[in-house]
Length: 103
Image (cartoon, rainbow, N blue to C red; front, side):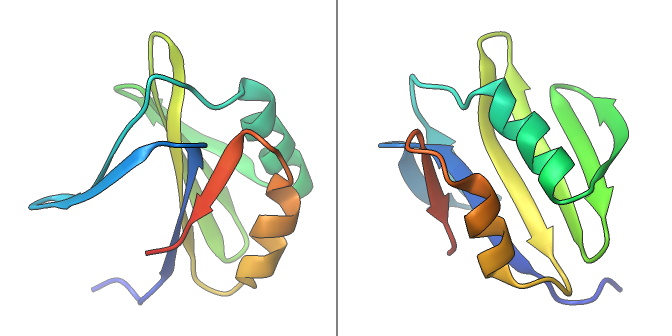
């Protein structure tokens, strides 16, 4: 059993959001800048984990970040927070092209 966490999604501005049978689904023709992922990894002191099937995973103290991508770029970033303040994530994002979505 995993411990409860707070979910935060980073999406391109204007992305459509829908709660489906398998969780949140997002749709947008835009993509997130790769520089955002690299900046988050550096700022939040994350280590790269396994990458597979269009997903890049990073781990850090109290959080896990998963970037979901296709051949056009990063569709969205899913962050699971166990023991870090959400405000730390919001401050690290600070990008006009990104919406911070907390369901």
